Image 1: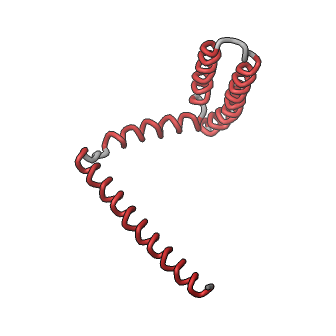
Image 2 (image 1 turned 180 degrees about the vertical axis):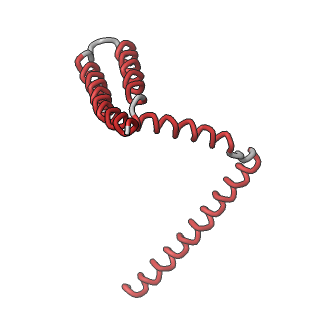
Image 3 (image 1 turned 135 degrees about the vertical axis):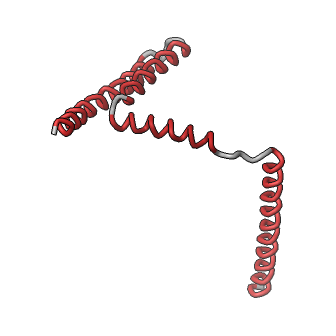
Length: 123
């Protein structure tokens, strides 16, 4: 019962946190436009700070926490991938290029043949 109450109160606070995130993004967009005459460096730095702040607030929500966990799991999965060697990549690329050329020539030949047949019929 207590866990359910805690979840409900967190979900209420999540909505508030998302409103704060939206407000930070809006302030950043408005500030970037309002201070358009300022140096680009200062505006980029301010946007980076606001972006990090928005990400930190968003990470405190349930969906933000889930997204962060997904990123961590994705990183773990990428480490498990057996990446092809340079030779395998080159060979596969050459096979794909060859297949594309063969199919392209076949389509060009078919198009030429059909155009020739239609020209014969139309006159």
